[in-house]
Image 1 (cartoon, rainbow, N blue to C red):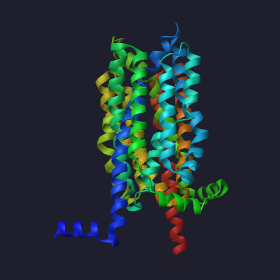
Image 2 (image 1 turned 60 degrees about the vertical axis):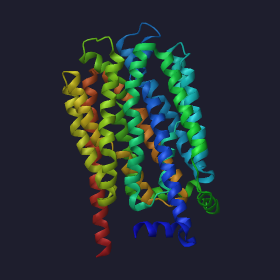
Image 3 (image 1 turned 45 degrees about the vertical axis):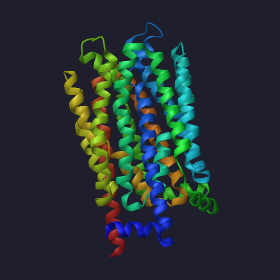
Image 4 (image 1 turned 120 degrees about the vertical axis):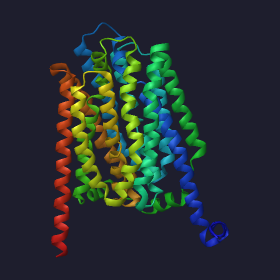
Length: 425
């Protein structure tokens, strides 16, 4: 009986349009999962050895390397902070596939050119230009979000997030092994090739709903109207602001992790590979839990899940500062990854729920800008703090940032619910 109903729905004109949309959405989710896997893997290949790559340009002091690791890591996101809403607005008007092709090609070309740089300043400029094209993964989430019913947005975006996390899981390990075995230049070449491959996959595999794009053209919101919509929803605005604090805390330690691993392993020869293990531990925990966090958000509210995740993340940063061996750091990075993996899917799903469809791309672009601002502040802050007080101090300050962010959001949720009850009474 079940098979008969499926066949009847497919050939009945009344149901054919719905079945086609569902089929297209499922195919797009599968393709974007694969593309995000390749892009995330390629991007994270270079993260474990970024600070080590800087050391190859000259005989620099530890504090100099720490500062420039933060600056070079963060400058990409500073540029992206300004252009993300523009990409989102273009996506709302012309479709997200175009943005995926442009940003993917730009990222791949920037990484390819990094293989021939000869100084810290040249690398800094390339990372700055790379920020103009940053936005492939956020745009992919906007594409899938626009095709997903609100009721299952968290679960679907959590599934898409597992592709990003899976790539992030394998990327540091592959990058570390390649850097130790063949050198940095070869790793940059392979990284660029993988991203070019993801762009080709999107070009020939993704099909966007043309009717939905035409509908968006009929009703376009001005930038002023979009900002007014955000300002009229206090909880939405606060979640965007908290995105900055969360990303600042999370990215404060990323550029320094290889140096921290060096301290814990007493100068082992395969530092890039060991740093890759530390990076991948977070990604593996993220992979296991992100889909379930999104599903929980669908059931109890994504903003409530965000509070839980931020408070738990605050607790899990402290043991990382107290680690005395690599296995301890890897263990707590894994537990932290299980918690932090739900933040981006839940935030995106919340925006999908409260923002009008015709402006979702631009609203998500502003949210990405807030996140990128945190990506700028975090590495620079971490590099400066580590230069003066040591790397362990960065973990403690990050824990405090997550704690304050969680408390602020919890207060906002309680205040909003109290106001609603007052209005109803």
